[in-house]
Length: 485
Image 1 (cartoon, one colour):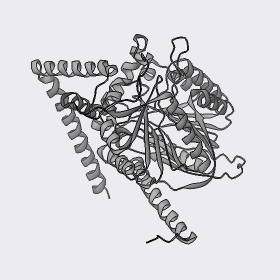
Image 2 (cartoon, helix red, strand yellow; image 1 turned 30 degrees about the vertical axis):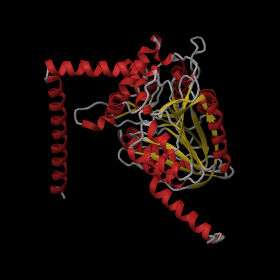
Image 3 (cartoon, one colour; image 1 turned 90 degrees about the horizontal axis):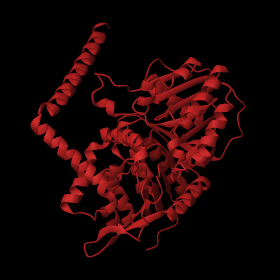
């Protein structure tokens, strides 16, 4: 029996229902009338940031996970100091863990002396408990309340690579927005600012309004435990009808999300996943590979980037929906961090992002199932690649990145161990160093605990003690407030 074609009114009703579902899942309305332009890699993002900051007349609001003491970081810091001395209000909200070396070394003192205001998100404290693992992973720059940049890039020369050392620039994606969505971006910044101190008092700057644009966008500002982006990612996997192409830097999806991707692929959706081969955090790439086999068996196509690092966090579905931002497909981004993403419903921009994804596949190698045991393997021989990210000259940077990730993702190591012990997939030679590091670390930890049991008892006592003290203090404050009414 033929299915009758839906009437325009019926299609409009379905579209309205979908928009309501997306708004509730993301916790953000669809805002029309914006202008948007995609920016690729440091070559396009960094100059756009610099030009906007240099032209600022009223205010510069920056919410950033990492602001490095390197060539680009020092250059941008000097530019911000110059604007602050020119009476432009400069506000920086930086994650303490992402910038701890710069903070302790006094890197931001000249900027403070120039008149900038700086706050640090979630510094270490005895009352923080497990909340210390939640970070502000957002990357946004708002200039004169007129334009906002949202990206996966941080303020760091690492994204520029090093031509002399043969390190290619990192592959990453950002977006520049103007229009009504700016109010949502400012509100997101204000919420984070207030979480670190007194509320934001920002004078209204009535600039000449630009001509209305034709891009509809949601600005999704997630906070710890809100899971807004996770719900939206799951919904997009369910709603995609033809294509769902995803790029992610630190892919460690939950069982629920993996099932959503597998179900979409089994239903005929062209699901593709592009991830790094050589990650700046080596063991994460190893853990990600443990998830390939069930995806491949369901029909999801998996590709590994051949270059130095692909750090983009993007998705495009059916050539009309796209997202760009800071959220990775893992538990930390979905449930523990403050993240910021832009969801776009525009065929032109989504088509551009889809074309870029297709172009990126030219520099990637597909992983396929091979052999009688149908194990994941490369679709073609790959040229030997020694990642500069893992070279001796990058030890300090790698150690910092690994420490950050290990604190938030340690629970996922079991997947890599299971893959080796049970033989659930073929282990590549390129993974030897990461597996050796994990194995040696676990062995040393086991020996240390065996001979010095207090090494595990002391942190547990400290965690339970500080956690209980924080709960008792909070209960006392609530009781005091109730008695004072």
